[in-house]
Length: 267
Length: 267
Image 1 (cartoon, rainbow over the protein chains, first blue to last red):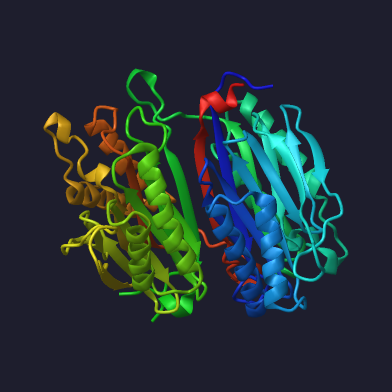
Image 2: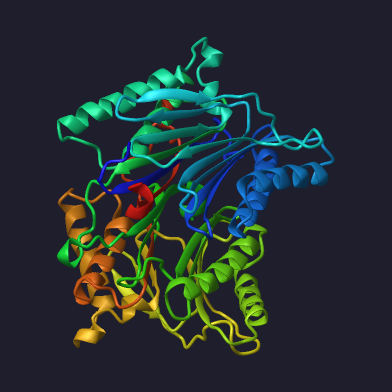
């Protein structure tokens, strides 16, 4: 499957809060893996606003801290469950997804503790399947474990991970969001643009933004829940950073953008 | 100073390894602050390659984990020092910078344990100054403390934080990198583009990339050390995400891009 092209890992996270709630109850964090690659943790605390944020924050924190120590993903997910269940006496639940690009094993590892599926698209023909085995939220029952899937790191692989605000977008208005169809359409449009050489440079970001925008549209501009979307893509590198003798400088980049609440800035 | 414009926090990180060394000895991580905002941790381990990475990794991990728990920045820096000094018996040093956009105090907090200055540019006239008080690397001496500076979150504030690979770029070739002049030039060109309405959408990213590219150029394409650049900018929001009745949806975004080493991908 792999070509001789240089590959690039692209990750894009886009988040929005439930309408009229200032703080998202979702937490998304990322950390470098000590043996190479990175992990993303997506936690959605029960309910919304401050109480949900407190829950998703302790879950994400625990998982991130263990992953940073080199603990394997499945053990980190189990530990986050045990920790939440102990802290909150089994009264409070959270969903937890861990997605890792593990350069040591050359795989993408997906650990789901969520009823939300993960969308996987592979190959130039955008073959799509769902990781949707039944999976339980953490924090409530004894011995909850994640459902783990391992995929090879190959060209034209895309993963879409999300919290349930995306899944339920439009429901209040009798509409539903056909996520697989939407993702396939977006990626096929991308494929066409690639043939036309009018390719967007940052496909993962374009897809995450398109999904979030569509969800907000289906909710008529007032998201009914916190929505978080994570896209991870393995792409051909568009423009390697040239060094001497065409050596690739292999620059790594991370960016963050968020609005500063007006009441803080407008003093 | 503040206008009625909506503000946006922009963060850009760009990293490159020393020439012919596959792994950067620098570690840059980011984490959400539990009371609002985010922190960035920039650690540079003594020497380069694997041993340096191991050091910068344990330093960054300790700091990130404490910041995630809500520990104040100065205490996190002291703890990272104590931890490294205990682990490595005071034999190994690292530089550590922590930069936080703290929405609870409405300030940017800079904690330096590094001989590298932090460049601060404020206001529409790009007034520039350096945070360059003498500051000691962590890991060696007893009771090492960070030098802490607090700045208000206001429009047109830019911070440039970097590891010493940027400072020493070109030295082997008898050249030096006048960083303040370069940063001022870049931002003034930005100001001109703003007046011409040809503004780059993501100024922090443009500045981080320009700094890294210039450093690599001064090193004739073979970086003499690991180089990490972090730019944090408080900007006018170019395109708020429109919701109903012009309500701003306040979308938060994070992106990561990095090349996948060829020996891993080309199997």
